[in-house]
Amino acid sequence: MTDQTPSDILNIELAREGELRTEWAGREMPVLRSIRERFEREQPLKGMRIAGCLHITSETANLVETLVAGGAEVTMCASNPLSTQDDVAAYLVSKGVPTFAIKGEDSATYNSHITSALDTKPHMTMDDGADLVAELHTARTELLDGIIGGMEETTTGVIRLKALAGEGKLRFPVVAVNDSDTKHMFDNRYGTGQSTLDGIIRATNVLITGKTIVTVGYGWCGRGFADRAKGMGAHTVVCEVDPVRALEAVMDGHRVMPMSEAAKIGDIFLTVTGGKHAVGGAHFDAMKDGAIVANSGHFNVEIDVEGLEARTETKRQVRQFVGEHTLEDGRRINLLAEGRLVNLGAAEGHPSSVMDMSFANQALAAEFIISNRDTLKPEVHNLPKDLDAEIARIKLNSIGMPIDTLTDEQAEYLASWEVGTA
Image (tube, rainbow, N blue to C red):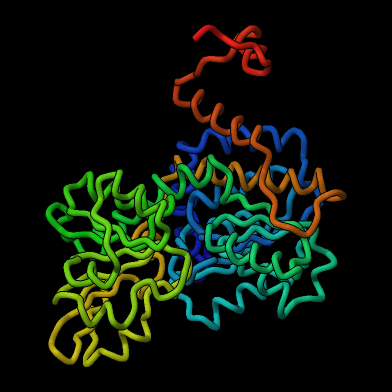
């Protein structure tokens, strides 16, 4: 130990912290653990090189350990400049997993890390936002012939991939992990709902009760956030362009109005649309002094940060993740986590219990691609529903809540034309 430098010792200490954090997260991930045990026996990923562009968190480390247990060679990079847990990255490196990620990295470093991950010439990609797929289809086309498939975990990424496939330009099959019920119904709703509130509270320490909170977008993420904000005593407003979702928000007990009106009354604004400039210039012009603006959509384009900057007279960092923008008329707009994912930038992301199911889908998607590599077309695919059911069943059993099963008679009745008496 005497020949170690202080930085070596620091990295060892950091890796140990990451190991403990990963172990703690793993206690709430029984589904992934059961898959890991089977993977260790069967080695379904043996010989596969996987490049992952995900948030480098303790939950992700449990996924990586599962993939490695299945025989894969895994290389990781970050899918967001602010989402990396440096101790977890150090832990993965200590376990022999090349990990290119630093919390707070600039855009040039972020892009170079994606390049480094692809330099391993992967057979499969595992994305959170489709950055690896985008890079492969633009700057690294020479690697496409070696790719047998990919996985995508976000709504934003799936939207991008379906657009690429719709143009006939997607070169390999991608499994839309996000579209599995055991992913979006739990990760997007319960995970985003809790972790986003966690990020806003950690960043600001404001009281939620009594605040008017505006949720922009009412997909699974939006409804999860709005419901939890309402449960904490907030006055909730929803802005939505889809009339069915807007009607659902009304039925769920939220006020619904255009963003142009909500901008005048909101105390806290949260974007979760998957789109661009959901909060923009005219909205900043209408906001009250002290308004807080945050984003939990994957990319930082949901808030028009440039539009806010153009209106800013002075700017200062008043808390670690709070940028205070003073406008020409003296009003202050507080932007959280630079407009990036507030739940990962200012907090730790989703609780491990919901990521258990999301990452179970990722691991099973890798196995699915390998098993069906000769028949999958270069399109966006969903995992079979029986895998969804199996993940849910394992989760229920792990928390001591088994469910009923149909008798043969009941199953036969449901599958037949037999008619009961009214």
